[in-house]
Each structure stands twice: as structure tokens, then as C-alpha cells.
Image (cartoon, rainbow, N blue to C red; front, side, top):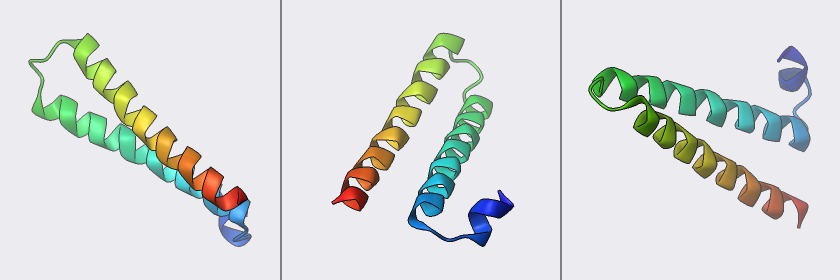
Length: 68
């Protein structure tokens, strides 16, 4: 982590963004589970996967723009 922060290259910024989105997804999922304990675990898992897919889509779009 220190290496990523010490060298602010485009690649490192991208890696930090990816890590940030991953951790944000985990945090949002944990909050959702806490608020909706009555939901089935399979539904909660689907929601988590969907959120991660959205984050991956954002990263893909950022990659495409960066490579242009």
C-alpha cells in the first residue's frame, strides 16, 4: 500500500481506485446485511455480486478512457 501511495503513477492510482471500490462494496454489503437480516443469504450474495459487477464496470470504463 505504501508503494502505491509513494509513486502516484496512473497505474498506481488505478490500483488504489480498484481497492477503494472493492472495500466500499464490502462496507455497503455489510451495512445492507445488518439492516436486512431477514433476507435469504442467497439474495444477499446476489446483491453483493451485482454491486461488485457495477464497480468492475466502472473500472473497465476508466481503463478504456485511460488507454485512449
